[in-house]
Amino acid sequence: MLKQFIVTGLLFINIIFAQNVSHLQLIHNVADPNAEKLDIYLDGKLFIDDFVFRSATKQLEISTEQSISIGIAPANSQSSRDIFKSFSLKL
Image (cartoon, rainbow, N blue to C red; front, top):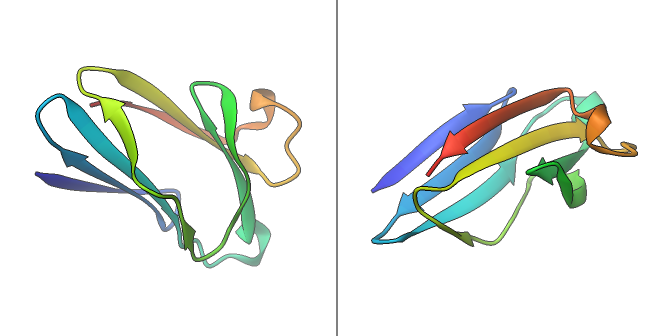
């Protein structure tokens, strides 16, 4: 089963559910000059530094029944304290 979420403009999250594993992919498609690059945090840790507009991550395997927190911060963020949008997903 495929689920898609649109977060903060056009940052897409694709999740494909399989037996005990989910596949997560982030796609940056926010067409705003102020968001040309973003920093992405997973569970409070920097996951992608300077995530560039019109780029995507590879599919990541995450075990199901796990909650994850995704945070979006400006490209010049120093820590997770700079996150301006966050949300949690239970896979």
